[in-house]
Length: 124
Image (cartoon, rainbow, N blue to C red):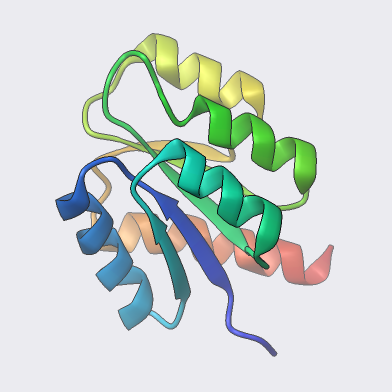
Protein backbone atom coordinates (compact mmCIF):
# COMPACT_ATOMS: atom_id res chain seq x y z
CA UNK A 1 0.00 0.00 0.00
CA UNK A 2 1.43 3.38 -0.97
CA UNK A 3 2.03 6.17 1.49
CA UNK A 4 -0.77 8.77 1.34
CA UNK A 5 0.39 12.25 0.34
CA UNK A 6 -1.16 15.31 1.93
CA UNK A 7 -1.11 18.61 0.07
CA UNK A 8 -0.86 21.42 2.62
CA UNK A 9 -1.61 24.97 1.48
CA UNK A 10 -0.92 27.47 4.27
CA UNK A 11 0.07 31.12 3.98
CA UNK A 12 1.77 31.12 7.38
CA UNK A 13 5.08 29.27 7.18
CA UNK A 14 4.98 28.39 10.89
CA UNK A 15 1.59 26.67 10.52
CA UNK A 16 2.77 24.90 7.37
CA UNK A 17 5.81 23.52 9.16
CA UNK A 18 3.83 22.55 12.28
CA UNK A 19 1.16 20.58 10.42
CA UNK A 20 3.69 19.15 7.97
CA UNK A 21 5.75 17.82 10.87
CA UNK A 22 2.69 16.23 12.48
CA UNK A 23 1.77 14.51 9.22
CA UNK A 24 5.27 13.26 8.44
CA UNK A 25 5.69 11.83 11.94
CA UNK A 26 2.37 10.03 11.44
CA UNK A 27 3.41 8.36 8.18
CA UNK A 28 2.02 10.78 5.60
CA UNK A 29 4.01 12.14 2.72
CA UNK A 30 3.67 15.89 2.42
CA UNK A 31 3.67 18.45 -0.36
CA UNK A 32 3.80 21.86 1.27
CA UNK A 33 2.77 25.08 -0.50
CA UNK A 34 2.68 28.67 0.72
CA UNK A 35 0.44 30.09 -2.00
CA UNK A 36 -2.84 29.32 -3.70
CA UNK A 37 -1.15 29.25 -7.12
CA UNK A 38 1.47 26.74 -5.93
CA UNK A 39 -1.26 24.58 -4.38
CA UNK A 40 -3.31 24.53 -7.58
CA UNK A 41 -0.22 23.63 -9.61
CA UNK A 42 0.50 20.71 -7.25
CA UNK A 43 -3.11 19.52 -7.62
CA UNK A 44 -2.77 19.54 -11.37
CA UNK A 45 0.56 17.72 -11.56
CA UNK A 46 1.02 15.49 -8.50
CA UNK A 47 -0.61 12.44 -6.96
CA UNK A 48 -2.38 13.82 -3.87
CA UNK A 49 -4.38 11.75 -1.36
CA UNK A 50 -5.84 14.56 0.76
CA UNK A 51 -5.80 18.37 0.69
CA UNK A 52 -5.43 20.50 3.82
CA UNK A 53 -6.04 24.24 3.53
CA UNK A 54 -5.80 27.08 5.95
CA UNK A 55 -8.47 29.69 6.47
CA UNK A 56 -6.60 32.51 8.11
CA UNK A 57 -8.78 35.46 7.14
CA UNK A 58 -12.45 36.02 6.36
CA UNK A 59 -11.42 36.30 2.69
CA UNK A 60 -10.76 32.50 2.74
CA UNK A 61 -8.07 32.52 0.08
CA UNK A 62 -7.96 28.72 0.05
CA UNK A 63 -11.41 28.65 -1.55
CA UNK A 64 -9.76 28.53 -5.00
CA UNK A 65 -7.78 25.42 -4.07
CA UNK A 66 -10.88 23.76 -2.62
CA UNK A 67 -12.91 24.44 -5.77
CA UNK A 68 -10.11 23.34 -8.12
CA UNK A 69 -9.46 20.19 -6.12
CA UNK A 70 -13.09 19.14 -6.33
CA UNK A 71 -13.14 19.87 -10.06
CA UNK A 72 -10.01 17.83 -10.78
CA UNK A 73 -10.38 15.03 -8.24
CA UNK A 74 -13.73 14.95 -6.46
CA UNK A 75 -12.68 11.75 -4.67
CA UNK A 76 -9.81 13.52 -2.85
CA UNK A 77 -11.02 14.85 0.52
CA UNK A 78 -10.34 18.48 1.45
CA UNK A 79 -9.94 19.55 5.08
CA UNK A 80 -9.99 23.22 6.11
CA UNK A 81 -8.04 24.31 9.19
CA UNK A 82 -8.94 27.71 10.61
CA UNK A 83 -6.96 29.91 12.96
CA UNK A 84 -10.24 31.25 14.32
CA UNK A 85 -13.77 30.15 13.62
CA UNK A 86 -15.55 32.25 11.02
CA UNK A 87 -19.10 30.98 10.57
CA UNK A 88 -19.40 32.40 7.03
CA UNK A 89 -16.17 30.66 5.95
CA UNK A 90 -17.23 27.45 7.70
CA UNK A 91 -20.57 27.38 5.88
CA UNK A 92 -18.96 28.27 2.57
CA UNK A 93 -16.27 25.58 2.88
CA UNK A 94 -18.78 22.91 3.82
CA UNK A 95 -21.18 23.99 1.06
CA UNK A 96 -18.34 23.81 -1.49
CA UNK A 97 -17.54 20.23 -0.45
CA UNK A 98 -14.93 20.25 2.33
CA UNK A 99 -15.03 17.11 4.47
CA UNK A 100 -14.47 19.08 7.67
CA UNK A 101 -13.53 22.47 9.07
CA UNK A 102 -11.44 22.42 12.24
CA UNK A 103 -10.42 25.37 14.39
CA UNK A 104 -6.76 25.02 15.45
CA UNK A 105 -7.07 21.26 15.87
CA UNK A 106 -4.80 19.36 18.18
CA UNK A 107 -2.73 16.57 16.69
CA UNK A 108 -5.10 13.78 17.71
CA UNK A 109 -8.25 15.41 16.30
CA UNK A 110 -6.64 16.27 12.97
CA UNK A 111 -5.18 12.78 12.54
CA UNK A 112 -8.49 11.17 13.46
CA UNK A 113 -10.23 13.10 10.64
CA UNK A 114 -7.47 12.29 8.14
CA UNK A 115 -7.19 8.61 9.05
CA UNK A 116 -10.97 8.23 8.85
CA UNK A 117 -10.99 9.74 5.37
CA UNK A 118 -8.09 7.57 4.21
CA UNK A 119 -9.92 4.44 5.39
CA UNK A 120 -13.09 5.52 3.60
CA UNK A 121 -11.13 6.07 0.40
CA UNK A 122 -9.47 2.67 0.66
CA UNK A 123 -12.84 0.95 0.67
CA UNK A 124 -14.65 3.17 -1.86
